[in-house]
Structures are given as structure tokens and as C-alpha cells.
Length: 498
Image (cartoon, rainbow, N blue to C red; front, side, top):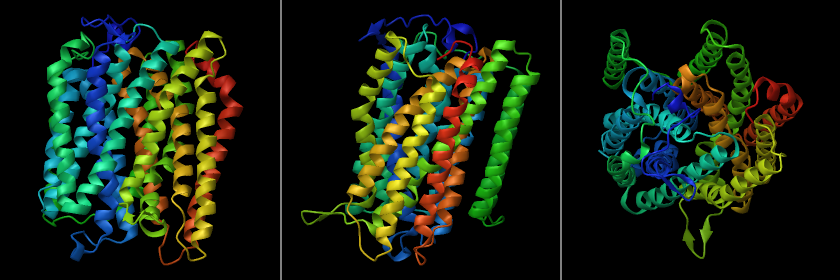
């Protein structure tokens, strides 16, 4: 997207379509684009690990839990790892709007490959999806921020509405994809997201005029930047061909471990570069330091949250009584519980932030992050107790996962939309898309760590199950308490941004 002040949200021009319900009409365009992308993404996630651990005789890949968890972490984390590159491409080469469209087309193609039926096409489809989400995800959020001239509570409310689109998609994806997979086979299940993303591309093309100038042009189009991009594409192509043909062997656990260290170093190094070497003003530099604290807290949060797609999904499949009046609910359908709570509670939290803002009692972003982590810690406590019951040899009620997802949803609403909003406001103008990419790197690092932690769980040694959730409880609670302790100095570094 453009890095001019009119597109970063500091002084955004109103969209030519005017407003609807007090918000720019372009918000609806981005709302539905993100909704369909999340429909496809979470629909795939609801069956991905189950497909990989299913025996080959049942149409699955027959992978062990450790490798399957690592691959899920790599896939989920990879989509966010490339968000930094996606932000850079938008900022420097094609603009946010074209980046969103290109990402949507890549995702549609990737989903079609997942449904093709070939093992090689399946992994190629995962790679296409990783590249597509990396382009779309940071830039659709940054473009939302560019629609708002004002900051504060109004922007937070806009992002909360946008976040409802995310969770509508993440509700219906896991609701329908596992059902289709159960009745018509795994590959039919993967075909449904391809159709959904095709709808997303069509509506974006039909309504993008309401975005006005938001995300319309890049900040620069340097030839060297294009050369670097095509070099990266060539490298990805060579590595993909070598892996799919068996020329190069990849151990997913080792790769996940290495990427965790690399991403952590990249995130810290890039932010130190922005703060110390990019020629920022003192106020911009202080805000980057504030973002460092928020991003560290975000990483811990997502490390626990991403269990939903790994260990929680296996917990639903193996240890949860899912029979409802004689009908066996697909394990993946339990992932609809979290977005149901988010959709129901998002307007409540949006109204709460606005009401507190009007009374000058709004919590600072660091304080909201702290409460998000503490609520996540409470959800891990629920899973710890549930896993102790599993060790006694009985399946548990789905109410245990339901309570966990309720606490997850409340924590998510305290942290995730607030994090999106804070990032767009705190980001230096020249690094708008790239800073949003760094926000999504916290999800990447959290995903890699989640896959590694889940890999320590062994279905044949159930004592590892409560140990997993106790570890996550400790990290979440410790992070929440630390954020409460440092919220005041971090707030001062934010220089007036709430």
C-alpha cells in the first residue's frame, strides 16, 4: 500500500462511496474479502491435521502426531511469516490493493490444488496458500486503517467490525468443510474453500471502487526491488521442485525449530533497525519500542491460541464425546465454537471500548494485552483439568472445550483487534505495510512454537497431555502479569496513541 500519510490513516481521505452506519463503505469490501479468505483458511485448518494423521486406507496421509503437528505449525506460521514480504511488496512495488487481489488469486489456485487428489499437488497447494495469505493478510488490514482519518475509539470500533468478518468466515469454514469431508471425502472437503475464495475475488473486483485512494499505489517502484522479488520467487520455485521430486528431504520438526529461532531474530533485528537506523523521529522511535513489548506479548498469546488447530483438534477427535442425539459431530466442527463466541461478543467489546473512551476511562493497549493473556491462561487451566480427567480413561464432555473457547474468544477480543489497530497507529509512515507484516510475524512465531510444543504430546503417554497445557498456562499467566507491570511505561512510549 502507499506509504503516504493519506493512506496510513493519519489523514486518510474519505472513500468516494461515502459512509454506511458511520463507517466508510470500503470497509464492507475489505470485510467480505477477509471473510471469504478466512472461510477458506479456517475451513482447511479444521481438517488439515486430521487428514494428515488419518491412515492411508481412510484416504489420509498416515503421518505421526509429531510430524503432523509440525507441518500444521509450519503451514499456519508460514502464511504469517511471509506477511512481512507481502507488506514490503505492497509498500514498494504494487500497492496494497493489488497485493490483496494477487493474494486472493493465489489462495484460490492453492485451494484448487489441495482438492486435486495428488499428494504432490496437495503440498504444492499449501505453498500457494502460504504465498497468497502472505500477500493478502497484512495489506487488507493496513487498508482498513487507511480508510480512517481519525484514530482512537472510532478506529478500534471499525477494526472490531472488520474482525467480525474474520470470525464469520472462521465460523462457517469449520462448520461446513468437515461435514463435506465426512460425507464426500477429504478432497471434496478441500474443494469447498476453493469455491469460497473464488466468491471473495469476485466481490473484491466488483466493489473495490469504494476504497477510494486507500492502498491504490506503492511508495516506490525501484527496479532493484523487482529484481529482489523475482530472485525470491525463483528460490522458492527451486526449493519446491527439489522437495516435491525427492531431491531434497525436509524434516518438518527440525525445520520448525530452525524457523522459530530465525523468525525471532528477524523480528527483533528488523524492529531494532527501524528504531535505530531508519532515521525515525524520536516519537516514532519510542513507538517502535512500544510495539516491541506488544509484539512479544502477542507471540506468547498465539503460541497458546494455535493449539486450537493442533492439540485441541486431536483432543476433540480422540478424547471428547461428540455424540449429539445419536449423531457423531465431526471433530473439526468443534472449531466453530470459538468464532461463535467472537461474533457474539465482538459488538459488546467494540461498544465497551467506545463507552470507556467517551468517559476517558479506556484501557491502554498494553493493559488490554495483559487481560488477553490472563484470559488465555485461564483457558489453559481448563484444558489442564480436562486432560487430567482424560488420564482416568474416559472421554470428556464437549463443555470442556466450549469453556476453553469462550475464554480464548474473550482473550482474543482483548488482544487481536486492538493489536491490529495499535499497529496501524504506531507504525512509522514509511513502514506501514512492513510493520503490519511484523505484527503477523508474531502469529508466525507463535504458530511454529505451538507446533513444537504440540509435538511433545504423545498419544501413547497421556502424562504428556496435562504437561503441555501446564506449560502454556505458565507462559500465558507470566506474560499477562508482566504486561500489567510494564503497561504504564509502555503507554508513555506510545506518545498519545491509546
